[in-house]
Length: 240
Ligand SMILES: [Zn+2]
Image (cartoon, rainbow, N blue to C red; front, side, top):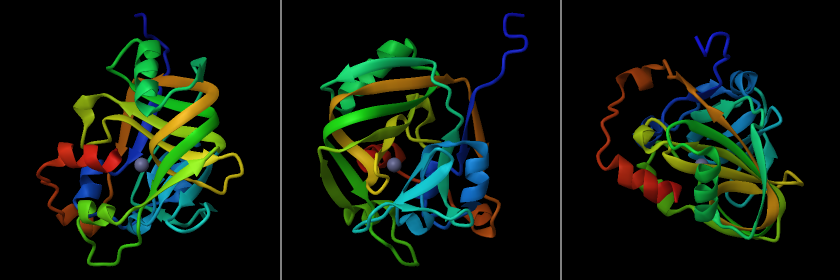
């Protein structure tokens, strides 16, 4: 058996994108339990009021109109995706945007059928980020909430893109395609990345052949209607 003794490399995801789009915005998992499983990744905060970056075993949250904040271990997250990251491959890159990064990454990975975790650390001409608005209960539908999102173009930052690429077959379970969040080197700015222009940097990535899913067990989740129409198109619009 060629694979005997091979250790599975897995992403662990807490809740699903489908559940988020179905309005399950309340925190379900503590920062503590998320970072115990993976030191690297992304997510969103309670009430979808912020975009979360998991870096070095800490969670940072980017909220509209505020500098990035380090989260407490008891803070709760409705959605997160984490892994342990051991770079399998590194590649210097220069002068590329988000779409070109996707092409480059898939060419280097030489497959579109596994999950990929990636970091791109470097200096950027611009990084265009989104930070969601605060929404109150009863929560509005995701697309309504996101219509009020704050977009910001961060000028000339140094920092790291952190995130995942997923095959299109898993849209809805997760975000298909490239989904990255940004954190600057000062750890005081970042958000969900809509686009960027890299000046120069170092891409590192790892392929994952495992995907662990942790679903919430709250009454709200157990009773939720998770049938969401138009999910594929709305995720594409929302995740930009
Ligand atoms: Zn995001």
